[in-house]
Image (tube, rainbow, N blue to C red; front, side, top):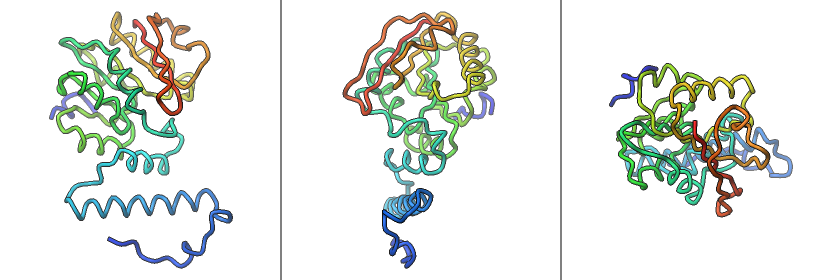
Length: 231
């Protein structure tokens, strides 16, 4: 997907399911049942309002069930964490690029901070979450794409800040290094904000990013660190 492309009720009874106990139910069956229930909740909301269910928790849980490895977290970022990340973003005439936008917790914080929606580009790999973001933030550019294609997406574009919720620790090293190289190429001298649940030394400093400061957000569950780098 290139830059020009993003300008712009009752569940049926199931005897077998009703007889399942939590003790005897396998993880796959629990996921299947939970997915059906969440789908019904979304359908009920659609019937009431004519719009897809707008709860970030429902959207996030649906994504966990669909792709647990891709989600990279056990719950959406809390308000305290999202606000802490948004405060670190530098916004001028260029773009604020959000990587791994998820259900839009950080997107909302960036908008609350006063950054114009047309200056925010939310990159999200999941088609399900990308559609959710488009419905939730109709004025924000949402790109459904893998972060490893940043060079193609933002070639020639001015970037002021990169705000990342990507689970970098869990990514394959080659992919992580590819993303880091592209960020350095596109936004040299600018700012990178990355949150992590990892408490060891940052792999980003080892990749050549200059750590400016860190902040621990204890009000988030689980507690997280916000790291601010000069690219």
